[in-house]
Image 1 (tube, rainbow, N blue to C red):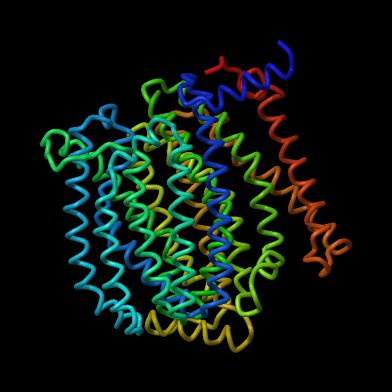
Image 2: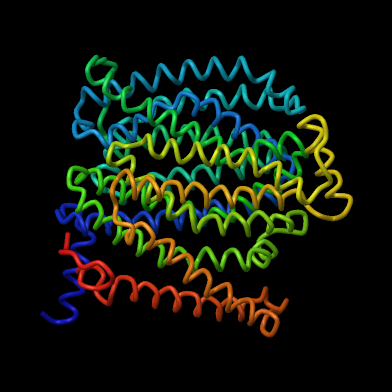
Length: 528
């Protein structure tokens, strides 16, 4: 077969949704998801660039607080329906899909009423009366979300990532246009509120276009009980995960001011851009692939090794580059009001190195029906964040006071007086929490799931070898080659070449020259 024929044959395999090979289907889903998420992040960046030039930082701070509050309320009762439908072998049957819709609707109504009741007290807690009305309007979004087609989970289960990509990009484009129109007309935070509500309508309608199954309001007791039984573990895990990953935004919004939260959110969103893309790649491809072979541990181990090594080879250099050049990136896209966002972008990008490992391990726990291990890992992270967040501020500020709120207010005030920003301590704490979570998950992978130590430590080796090499090269070259001209672009290009070269060499050393045939590297196995 000629070289061109091989290329055409391979292309056909990757574009044919009827392809049966789990390996090809997984890679195909990962490829589509990477493309979709990349374009999605570009759309989000465009939206951010446009809206930050129309609105002020306080608007983004208020919106971040309202969004976090709504997420907190919703995740308190997260039923884990989508995960349960993907993981359950019978999740595509009408009895399960119909019951899932009823569970979602009941939960939506309850949370809508709860949000309305809490809107006033929460607005008083944050000291911003505007939050009362914002939460009241945004509560309708919970009702809208509850009508989303439960069969959307089947798109992920079938590894039909191209349909998910079309759904996500379509609703994002409509949401971006809507947000910009509202911002130009209203010129205040309500533009973001109404834009978000409209986007939720677009997502609900789009879910029935992408997956034409029409659920009915018919309750099946056995199916409902099974979904709720699995979902209770997901609910605990999701709640703990949310608190752990969002404690920084909760503290900053309350204890400093909304301007600072707005700036921090910009840096956070920039820092997690790459991290989120790779997380979603795993959610769309790795999780359903492993779920389909969950009863074959050796096969799961092979898929894990191959998937994580490849993703780390791509993500580590990108995350390292986004961290070391975070200031140049912020300066390129935002005006001087948001320049300090680079501090958060730096530490969150570094955290991404370990979040990618964490998400792979988390997906393994869930696909094998062992969410309890992920819950314990996140619980350790939650304890760590509550210790390190105030400690991070304390080490840069003055000392402990008598009351928790007064401690933070006095520390942050002192930092501002001496020109040291409060973003630093919070971001450093969140980075450390990411490392702790990934480490605890690795212990569970080794001692509970019985994964070989050599497989579990492999991504850590990639972070250490590749990340360490990139950081060392930057340390020695920056004094000689760093420049303020053209946003330091020539030096960035040189570092990108060096970074990907280092990652590629490390990948080959670990996996061999033919990683997908399982013939090289430290572990020799048969092809999946």
